[in-house]
Length: 195
Image (tube, rainbow, N blue to C red; front, side, top):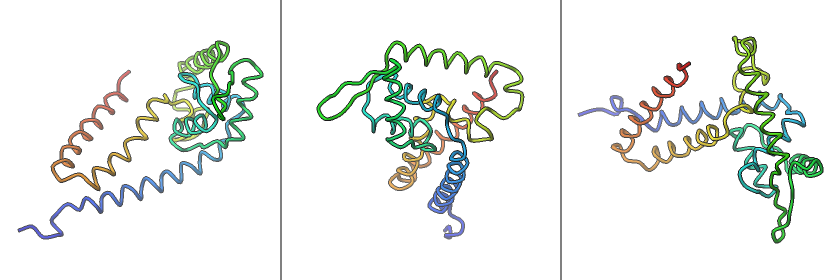
């Protein structure tokens, strides 16, 4: 018969992982707060947020926060200021739906995003920009503005499902999940190692 000390304590591991994530997340947020996005970066973030579908002010701010993994949560005032500038520049348009003001991207805004992406791709392809030098966003953990939003959104959904598995899953479900996580970890390393 196994004793308590011989058994794997999943709750203790989850507690340690949660503590690590909170501490690392807090440190990362503190580090990111020292990086103030310029007006152009904020405007591009707003355009990305409305690129695929029209949104209201709160949805845009939430979308930006989600795309940054929660590291940057712009206030409504800052987002509204950028939206106003984008509407005046003809890169976004606004209309009312009931009591809400909805914003959408224009062709000019799409062209601006495409140009920004092309510049980003050119900078990333330059050897001196990637040869071990710090990115334009600084040290480790500050490259989130250049991350694929789909990656950030998907990655942000992992924590809650792992917590659900830890809290409500039985041992068989947790064992199966461990296999999936291990396989995914190996596949992610393969992706990183690919040229």
